[in-house]
Length: 191
Ligand code: AP5
Image 1 (tube, rainbow, N blue to C red):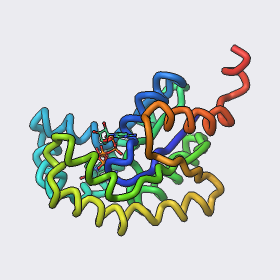
Image 2 (tube, rainbow, N blue to C red; image 1 turned 90 degrees about the horizontal axis):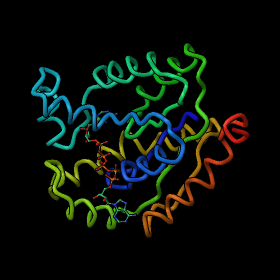
Image 3 (cartoon, rainbow, N blue to C red; image 1 turned 180 degrees about the vertical axis):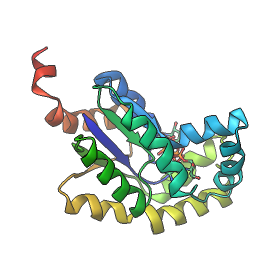
Image 4 (cartoon, helix red, strand yellow; image 1 turned 120 degrees about the vertical axis):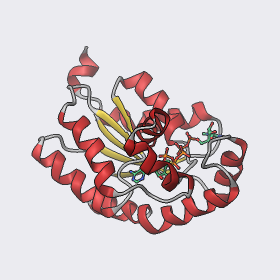
């Protein structure tokens, strides 16, 4: 299966990725995790990304596309789960071009519907370096401007499915699995 998780910061993409990967063994590709690994390693890319992430801004499309392309080109047959990518129209269009070239069309884009008040509470209760109130507001603003338009983009392609992202984590996972069952390859179901 080839899946994108779309949603605001704190909408539960990372949390639900764990459940999806456990059930369907798809490969989890989180650009946020990749960037945090670069920051932790103190690499040149990480040093460049650190300040941008702590300000709640987006790292450049070129950097993120480079990281993703490398991994998708080397992907195995498990399929993939993109978490936090794409986040801009430029990224979405570049992803389309890459997947066309690789003959790996997307199956579904899951949009996590969570209101901003709930998001603020969740993120303030966490302790990541970009989870202070000012940065969260900036991340939400950037999300509105740059990422929210992707809902329409994928809806126009007939790929978008909305999941209510509020409530107990396992109930949300169950809602997601109900949708994903439609996309499990027949051979996997038979096996
Ligand atoms: P990234 O790591 O992608 O962060 P984000 O999108 O801001 O998402 P979060 O990890 O905060 O939230 P989430 O939706 O994964 O929710 P989670 O499950 O963690 O990106 C970080 C930064 O990297 C960006 O700001 C940007 O600078 C850069 N970046 C990354 N990708 C990029 C790209 N493609 N282009 C450019 N720049 C990029 O849950 C959040 C909290 O809520 C957790 O504490 C969790 O336990 C809790 N929670 C989850 N579900 C529930 C629930 N149902 N009820 C109560 N609490 C819950």
